[in-house]
Image (tube, rainbow, N blue to C red; front, side):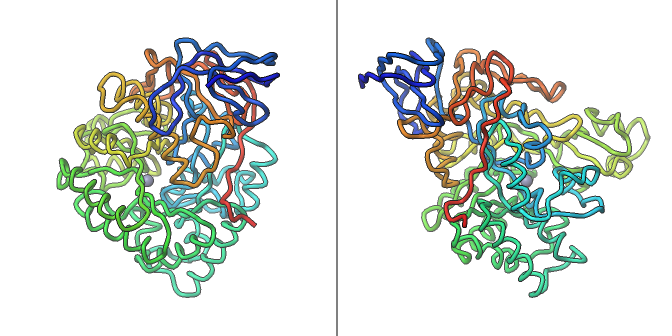
Length: 487
Ligand SMILES: [Zn+2]
């Protein structure tokens, strides 16, 4: 399409535009004005305040990381460097039942809440979602955030003991807090039914809370009760709960986590597809055969290898193999783990075939599940998106680049109801990435996990250049993306 414009703030010229819908790339210019894209096509612009030459490069929507634990990182590192550097312009926070708000306590938060909540830093505690939202508005980060409220966080606030189902009175209290959070803009609700603080919650308790979602078009995201030998039962529970509550559901970081289910991803994906024919279902996945979370004894058995990602008791253990530490201490893996607590681990517990099949499924969205405050984090924190684009799309040819981009932009925006995001289109928000598709690669490894990706030229958030030539520009134009029924 030919178009002539008098002026624009920013003009990106001559790139291969991949628009996020899955359509084939086209050569085009993109013009931005204020926080929006105003034209895409063969553009003649009389005066552009700034020009980016994208010849030989790809222009895509900014990546949406649908599965993160960046609640506190948005405030403690407002550049959100691990994400911005790989082209992410929006993160969904508050996953796996753990959100930073609503929470106030001088007690140490029980694992895995300690992955996000710090008892060392009271200024980073928020008794209401509204207070968290207000702080993000006062001190905006470089990228956008879509906030979920975590069931474990709510349970810690409402219950004296977490090893039992909530009473009716406690459910009522949690529902009120969740409703207030949704009214103030939270985009949904998450559970982490695998974890001790959430485990004792029966499906009926989850359903009672999730019933608050439909009035706000909220999304339910779940780290299911079991991703190993009970994977199929957990999928059924997930779909039942969401159907009864009348809300859309996202299965978090779908995987086949133990020997009992290795190689069964074709079946699990078929189960997800069958549910999706009846109700609104999505899932996300990260591109690695290892997962990461707090140190948990039940994850020793399904893992081929475990790397310690942090330890309060033995800080120098971060980055070392648990097996080496256990050999040095002449004890079992479980005993070594006990001595390292509290801490985190990286668990090699999946098979490559399953990871690739799940990644390649058309319903699969990309979510990093990066854990930002670990001393030696899983490389997914810095490498997820370039790894999908470089390793899995370009090198392994698992899917075309257009499909890889759709899985991290258009599909994600649609699932979370992010109007005007995830597409390169006139009228959409100016969240964009310019990258070199021949060079893009994850540089973060299990040995050196905090290296910025290669091949990212420029990242634009709400019309402003936030990352260029390998560094942040200091721009802080990120916004909290609230649900459409926020009051
Ligand atoms: Zn999780």
